[in-house]
Length: 616
Image 1 (spheres, one colour):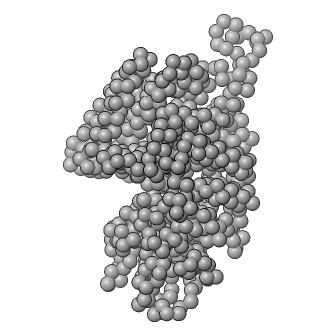
Image 2 (spheres, rainbow, N blue to C red):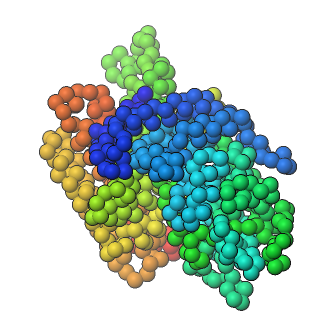
């Protein structure tokens, strides 16, 4: 109930999500329908996900030579999620969706991530289908996206390769036209793909009757050479099992083979795979293919050479999803630590009589340092949840608001997406570490869940764009795009929050501190790009992102605190005291850190960039 109450405050009292029902797209809804969705998802998460979080950790997927084996609980959770309609929650009615605001969808999915992120809740399937609804043909939407939304099929994204990692310029998977009539297939221009893809989540399983892979590959030029860089990358639908134009399985297996399962530190309930495309393990019939038969069949999405632009639609959506996953793992650890600290007696209060062993022990939550650790977790995780829901609300603005407001939302999302992905990934992981610390030695054992939360969360700084890549994207592109207009918009919103907060005596100190932090970020941004060497400007991109993210979270907390103070009795409520206390903690303990981070950015410190390899 604690999470449910927090989400309700953020959605309704802070973000005023109920006001979206005044827009045509959401006019059939009311707060009651939003609450019904939240209640349903909370119940499914509690019944089908949470009880099996440890089970899927210890019974990780394995391959028996023919199929990947997963616990039965995973099938039941997948079925319950699909039947809830959440795979297509934000889609149009005419494709089976509920036309929910994305902010409500994101909040509802948070319950699943908190209960068991390892089991998963269809993030990649929904993202895959959403991409096709934007960039796919009408036939691709009808055959592939609709079957993914229904839960009949699932989806993946296949970007990375063993030799390339995050460097998409070095993608080597090839796609050649499949015979002279390759362009005539109703499912899309038909190609044959050969190559290897690595780190493919949910790349092989029997949870659904088919898996729809979205694969990046390059089409060779007339000389048979691959175009260097990212401009030659195209996007293809590669189904695990072949289908016809009616969406029926043909009975033939596409040439997509599992090369191996990755055995992970955490997040073990979801398979992670190495896939081989076109290696010949499942050779397809040759009929009518002009001898081009070798390879996995794929159908072109969008225009040739525009695959990366299409895939970014899914990647950006996935990055917000990763931020929510990191946030909810942090919150799960915080809730566990709070319960443990409230019930674990140990020690006596410092002060008069505190050394008297005849006095009863007190719960460890009464010790100042334990309160510090719990307050840090609350500030990190509830602040991160507010950030993610704010970004989700921007998605709603981008899609349904009037043109000027929608364009502002688009640009703010561009700037905030690296923070929405990276900040929870770093600081909610730190919250999980603090949760272990609160438990003491017990936290380091498998008798308590906090060690699993930490292991599961450690992935989030790596996948969907590693931490350093997000930092370079932020400093190297996002704060500069459109002559810095996105950064200016963000500064304006921060300034507006500071102005509202300054009307409350208890928040004036923080309003001033936020304005000061914003000036520091602006000065460091100019300093980083004061020279002509982009490598030197980006050498300290991660400290820049840390400072930028802390400034954003300070703004989020100040805005939340201002909303919490509305009403005559609000300040006396424990929930309001909690939000004000977390704001106070963040401004006094966390925001001052940005000075150290930004100092190396502003002067373009070359300590790391110039360090000789031999000296390591």
